[in-house]
Length: 380
Image (cartoon, rainbow, N blue to C red):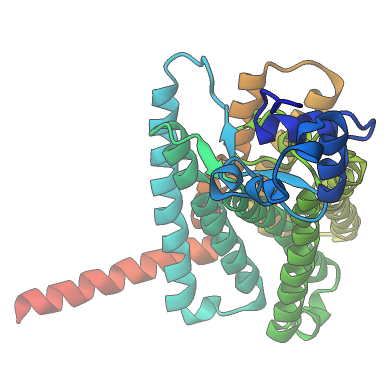
């Protein structure tokens, strides 16, 4: 009489999936493979053994649907063996606090000062909101994961985490494109600026951007549900990053790779190319202005945008190109990507507050009003 094999259900499932060249198998095929290779389940075991495979204790280690095997949790292995890494976590904590304060100040100034209720500052407000939400999506969870050593993350939470981090990063990228469009119309078509760049027009552009990016990122994250994870669940990154998660799959992930390349092109390559094109047009328009002072004055309106664009795109593109063309130590790559995600939201409100005269003057006016009101109250 056949004896029960000395393997757990999870081990037999892995044996079954690994037997296929493409490492892909339906749940029914898994049952058939187990019955064929382990006669005990065909000849001796009770008919209910298939239901036993789906007991809560089995589900706690792996979740099945009609085709794919998903782990209950992933493990983030980022920042392993980095000396004095706790100082970096403390630095990130300060970065987040300053990001919240800086973007909060920018929100308040744009909201309180009516002269800033313009299409241009609708875009700036959107950038500040995206920066704040992006940092909030990433940094608190990152600190909880590594500073407090909560490295395991539930499968569904991992996908949600991935969606929001990638979504807000993509929003930052395309908000800079809309800013470039604003500067392009202002300098190349100054007489038609107020008729072209209106509040409704900017609102439609921002809404279209939000919906389009949401759909693309949702499709990208949704494709992970079509992967099976039957071996390692260790994600070699500082968050549930798309590439490291897809590389853990034991079935065909070519569609995920194509989607990743497509989104990388759309979110990180196409925007700077569009911005570069707008600035070529701006440079041509400025060259036609006879007065040197007028040229400098017009160009000054672009300096804040150029600084923010350089801070966001240059490190992002250079790190990704370096990762593709040469070897970067995993810890160096992870620290670079962490800074890429966290430093621009910190600097953006500082640049707009210090480099933009309208915002700087508005802050001064608010401070003066507060001083006058406090003096009046003290006299009473």
